[in-house]
Image 1 (spheres, rainbow, N blue to C red):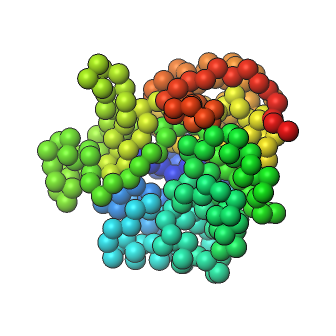
Image 2: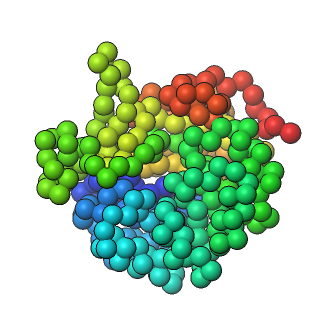
Length: 303
């Protein structure tokens, strides 16, 4: 099974991003997604910078994929989208239907997790449009994914979000700016102050959500490291790890050891507890509320 590093969802200083991907080049991750998915106002790196990083990572033996923005809001966003989809070197992850339209019939692409693919008919349609791999929606439970894969078009690879804060929703409003009493158009790029997002707690002081600019994430950290055997058994080709400000290379190493059988899943899960920026969860995978942590007792895939 391949390991994929998803796109960086947070806003970090330029040098932090550069150092991060220098480290990633030396890890065992197979696929690296690059680019701004959340907010086009983030300007520490521009498209030429992402392309330079892509070239460096490809030189290190990684499969590089350029991710497109999930919520297109302006003509400048469209111009960037056209440049990404028109690049003649790297595979593209389409995160909205505008990107799919530009890529359809011209080049293979990855159907991203924000495209709402929830049934075999929709999956077959995206395969006809040119998808070579799809990323299942983060809230898809195991029985639904199993049924999807039984009917999946031949040759279409499947990737599953397996570690990180869950990307739940996007909005035209920037909640991080609003928290600082700033308008979106004069946000002062305040999300750069929160390298793993801004925690939102309930009145009882319990972690509830994380604000990341216009994106809302889960406060708990999704973790399927103890489900890798099941994922492989039902036909999943790659699992996605979402970048965080600390321990990402170590988390990649744990997933690699667990996937290869060199480390027991239970031990790997215990290691991840101290590396995650929040409590672990796996509820969606088991058809439960997403923030729940369900004890895993199985070790074989469903027939």
